Length: 505
View (cartoon, rainbow, N blue to C red):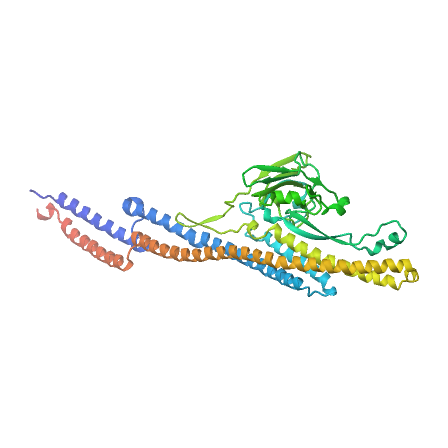
């Protein structure tokens, strides 16, 4: 085959271009540190790079955002639960003292304030937030567990359905016809009939709230329904009592049921209690529109209907439902792996806690009141208005005698109540500790997941680097060799193509 100068020239230029392209490619790799600079350079590397980069970004999101956020949420939850347990332990300590009646008269008023302070402290933990979200409100992370201020409860009323077990009914001991030193003059004047204090036992059921509405609310009336063991439902006839009927609160006939809106209690007569005590459950539907700051929000605990008064005077109605499944907030902490981070307030901060503390404070106040009554009556013994009057002295001594009996009864009731609340608060603490243990278990799981995610991220980053990045030393050496080849090609080609046919003519 005849080889022409043109053929030699073209071939030499084509080979030099390839050498130059190789030098350029290696130069880009050395300067960028990447195997390719465009997907067209190597589609296989490009596709793998997209997949590996996506995986690394997801793992980095889990490691530096989701897991860290979940850990912070659970850290804050753990701290709040620890505060609740500390306050519960303090209440338990007072219950232990009260069960032994080691309180002095001077201590009683301080103890009342302390107990109420502990209740407020426990409930206030329900408003704990993390990154602007309420920890214990389930999915309603923008809503406080309790009414934190006047504005939060303004214009709100609720129709509440509260389901309770029959073991919530207690045999409550109360003292009626309490001695009242201020009624002495009225008794001496014959305007008031004096009656000695007596003990009354009644079967009572304490609802979650007190100061309830006694009438209907948007067509909803108060009702008490008992679900029997055979599945049938019995609706009990009730008598609603006002504060003016306080003397008859616990004086209930055998076949009657008293509803006391003021205290939030239902009082059962003997026959009624015996007929329902083996039933499956009792459901009470009631209305409440007068909430106090610090009260727990009904929608977080019960099936209820909220009636919110709007600025134009209309009423907005919202139904809320509470399910056994709860409202777990789950974080995605690894591929298709989710972990619940929240604790619902209804599982650790209950109405029973507040009601038990209120009962203890009231029991202490009752003892304090009768002690003050005794002190006042003893003062009357030396009062010139009464000391020279035989009838007055006789009445005062009678009242003192009865007051001592009343004091003994109230101290006995207080000791019994505090003793029962030792058990109650131990149960409360056990329940809270169980929730704390769940958080701790999930936190330990999260730490293991974090370790696994870190390992996965490192592995995929190595794969990503292996797919995309060059070995700098090898690429630099190859570049040097390619440059030598190119320079040699230039020198050789210059010798070949500089001679033409004219050089030989």
